[in-house]
Each structure stands twice: as C-alpha cells, then as structure tokens.
Image (cartoon, rainbow, N blue to C red; front, side, top):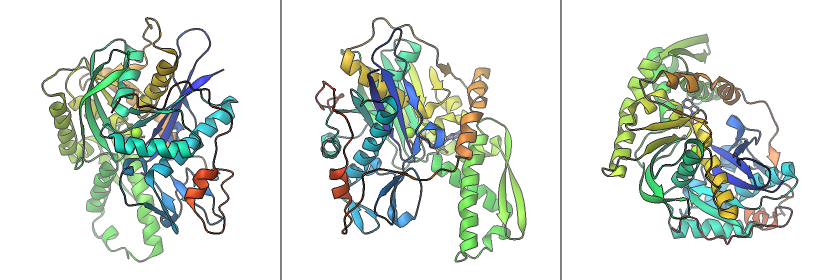
Amino acid sequence: MPYVLGVDVGTTRTAAAVCRLGGAGRAEPEVVGLGGPGGGVASFLQLTPDGTIAVGEPGDPRRTATGFLRRVGDEVPVVLGSELCAPEELTALMVAWVARQVADREGERASHVVLTHPPGWGPHAKGLVHGALRAMGLPEVTLLAEPLAAAENHVFARGPASTVGVFSMGSHAFSAALVRRAPDRGFELLSWTEGVDQDAGADFDDAVLSHVRTELGRALGELDAEDPRALSLLARLRRDCEAAKRVLSGTPETAVPVHLPTGPVEVVLTRARFEELIRPAVEQAVESLRRTCRGTTPDAVVLVGGSARIPLIAASVPGRVALEAAPETSVVKGAALAARRLLVGPEDEPEPVETSVLARGDDPRLRFPVGALELDDAEIAAPPPRPPVEITPLDLPERRSVKRVVRGFAVSGRSRGSRSPDDEDGR
Ligand SMILES: Nc1ncnc2c1ncn2[C@@H]1O[C@H](COP(=O)(O)OP(=O)(O)O)[C@@H](O)[C@H]1O
Ligand SMILES: [Mg+2]
C-alpha cells in the first residue's frame, strides 16, 4: 500500500514513521523498527576499514560520525578516517539509508518523505540539506521544523489546538517553541529558543556519574587513566549511569553497578537525589519555554524527546501539559502525518484517538506512562547483538571518498511524490 515516510535524525537516535495512504479509517502514524535502541537506529555512521559505511554501530571514534544533523551549516567538516565529510552529506546518507530500509520492507518507495530539523534552521542549512538529498537521489523531501511536527502529532492524537508550546529535550539538544495553526491545517512557528548552555540528557548522565564518583571517592579516583582496563570500566560505568537515569523515571530508587578492579560494588541513587542534581537545569529549560511563549498561554504544552520521560520535567512545566508514553517518537510521527497531509490534504474532521497522557506533577496518571515504559527501556539497556548494517553498494574506490559514495548511492524505485521539495514551513 502506498505510504509516506517521516524521518527524525536525532543526535543519538534516528527514527522513522510511516503513514498509509490507502485503506479505511484514520491513517495512524506507525513508528518503523530500524533494529536499534527504542525502535530507531543509533545515529552512527562508521567508515569501516574495508571502505563501506556501517550504520547504527559505534566504532573507532576516529572513523565514526554522530550528531551530524545538528552540525549542518558548520563549515568544519566531520572527519571520518582520512575523509572529510560535510554534515549535510552524512545527514542525507542517513535519510537515504532509512528510506531504503523502509522501502525494502514495504516493497515500494515512500510517496513522500518529511525530514525534521531544529527550529533555528534558516534557508542556508535547509538548502545544504536539500542539495545533499538531491545528490543522494532523494529530491522529494520536505523539511519540517521539529516543533511543527510535534504539534501536528499532538492535534492528531488529542484534537484541535490553535497554539501549542513545544518543550523538546533529547540527549544533547534542548529547544522551546511556540507554534500556531496555519491556514493549510499545518502549523507555523511563532517563536523558538534553542538551548546553547542548556543541559540535556547526556549532561544528566554526567550528573549521575559525578554522584557515583563522589560516593566512591578514592576507589575510582585512583584508577590509572592510561590503563585500557580503567578506560573500559569508565565507559561501561557511563552507560550504566545512563541506564540508571532511565530506571529512575519509573522507580524511586536504583543502584549503579561499578566494576572496580577490586570487585564489583553498587552505588545507590534515589530519584529525589537525581532530581536535586538536575533541578537547576530543568528550571532553566522551563524558564526558556516561558520566555519563548512571551506571555501567551498555549492551549497545550507538548513535551517531546527522550528526556521528557523524566517525571520532574512534566511536574515543572506550567500549563496544560501533554506527554506521550514514548515522547522520543512524537516528532517523527508528526513528520509522517505532515507528509500525508502534504500529499492528500488534511483528513476530514478526524476523531482524535487517545494516545498521549496528560501529565501534571500531581497527576497520579503520570506514573503510569513512565512505569509502562519498561519494555522500551529494557530494549535500550540491552540491545540485541547485531552486526553493523551496511549500505550497499558502498564499495569505495582506492582513494576513499565519501562524496563518491554519496553519489553512487541511490534508493531503488521511482519517486511518486508530487510535491516540490520546497520547505513546508517556508523558512
Ligand atoms: N526513561 C527515560 N528517562 C530519562 N531519560 C531517558 C529515558 N529514555 C531515554 N532517555 C534519554 O533520552 C535521550 C535520548 O532522547 P532522543 O530524543 O531519543 O534522542 P536524540 O537526542 O538523539 O534526539 C537520552 O539522553 C536518553 O538517556
Ligand atoms: Mg530526538
């Protein structure tokens, strides 16, 4: 059945969602499993020693790129081994890989693709990405600012709203935005803030790590930083701190395992202590949202991104707060819905389906969505071992050039999209 595709290339995780074009009933957006954490795929592109690009697996940091979408427009190239790659080329490569994974599964190419981007992108960044996508054989991609996708998903799930505040916190990035209904049934950006000095998920992992260091004192401090075993211990500890942080979204207390050379120990961390550690950062983000809304009280404030699962966030944001059970997928689902609307127009008087949970700090229902996320969390904590997925054909010639790879890579099938690649939000 024909379908449209939404893609969200996050700093750490790339997600995809499809929306069917035929069939009866409402076109629910469906998140597509890409074989990685939380259903998406880790945003890693690795130039392997045999000259192919592996997607989704961290490798030698000198040959692995991550966080490239947020670097689009930055003239400093990303170094992959001996190659210098423009961030927009890596972004396009990731989108093309996702589009092909989905096309292989669906048996046909997406009729249209919407790629989300940070709200602050202007014509320069968008032009670079459009150019790189065209070079990859993907001319029919609409770029849509993340808050607009988040709002689109919100009204689909919960019914009409004319102004929506969007609080977005992922692993590294934070943004706050105020959007309003546009005449075409989509949304338009009224104002936004992107957090430059704003702590987000990865900084919260660091806060947990500092707590562990403080608790263990010299036992950790005495490790020899040059010793490879100590380095691997610290890398594992950081992953365990991130996992403990996620567990604390569902339980009041957890313990971080530390595999010291002298034997394993555990450091207890309560949610109360964790909240104390991150409260200043959360308050700063809430203040950014307040300033971004400039005195307007939006009909709803949507919390999106993986860090929105932290209960302190929903408890701190004022107004009518909406949080989906998997807030890291809200943007990509909105992208798929926007792609559908662009192609076939808005659905007639859609009946909202309850897929999100209104959450207040004092709302007992808040505990439910967080507690119910254990399955996802388990998936993130223990991803099944899998070999890197390779983009084929990506055999690089003697002088390895990712640019050549990008040119050589084409998504199979013909595009049936009818819309020009002009930007949805007209920015
Ligand atoms: N249950 C949870 N509680 C707290 N933080 C979480 C939870 N699940 C995921 N996260 C955090 O969300 C962040 C990833 O958010 P996401 O929106 O998927 O990433 P990206 O920054 O790549 O867009 C990570 O920092 C991760 O630790
Ligand atoms: Mg994200």
